[in-house]
Length: 361
Image (cartoon, rainbow, N blue to C red; front, top):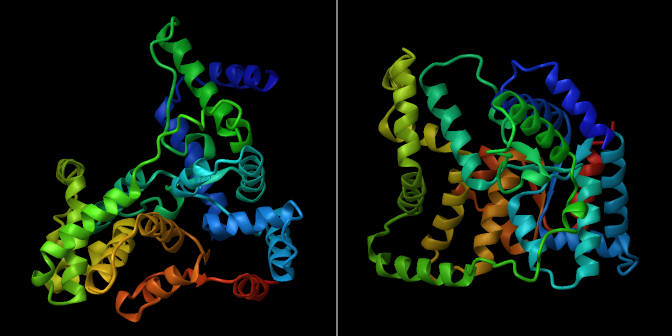
């Protein structure tokens, strides 16, 4: 309560800072802190492995060494294990309260309360930076500093509105409430989240629908590149209105025409340059196109979750620990993901430990 009181006093003395400015300042500061750390992304399988080590249920020596090493780099300010909303969604699926709580505690410990912003918001920010960059805008805040938030806002920001107070006092309450929630942990959130009534998306039904669509249009696909372009443009179409608004903003602010900044490039080169700058869509399209091009493979509901993990990890982290099939998929040469992004993908504790030990000193 003393902390809330102190933030209220602080914001009362700084009435000229809007809620939007305050939130953005906090997020940019967080992003700069994250950029200086080695980012290790664990899929839920690895979170469970390490949780069981923490609980004394798994005595695998390589996992024990991996957990010790991760704890060390986190404690020394060298590393961090941020999560995404996909990890949280899978955590919510766990039926046993005690093990779910133990996983939450470990996430709090190793993530330092940091998550990537929810997938659609991340894509929107990537589009914004991509379009402004193509328009020749200089001194943009790097995208790597704009995609992080604290765990309490993992599904987006919510602020108190229509309070019984006047506008100035409501603004103080909004900013203070944001500061309070900023430091709320997943463990604390467990106390008031209703897991029993949490309605999970039907990932398998979505996968079945996509498989049917892929089958119906299989004869139209002549190459992986064609499949990729179809997947990327399909994802991009969901953000058509946002893109139109961004184009208007660029034009209204008098920036150069986007075409002028792409002179000398072929249409394919322009597309490639743009698509890779929208990292989340690009990685997701690569994964979906890889499955679509392999006509002997069918999408599963778990694939859809795995692809979201890949988008988060490859796009914004340095090491991705996941299961072997996903490592194999994203490492295929024709996807180009190992060239496009520096993130190392490993599927074993030994592999992860080798990468972390190489970072010593």
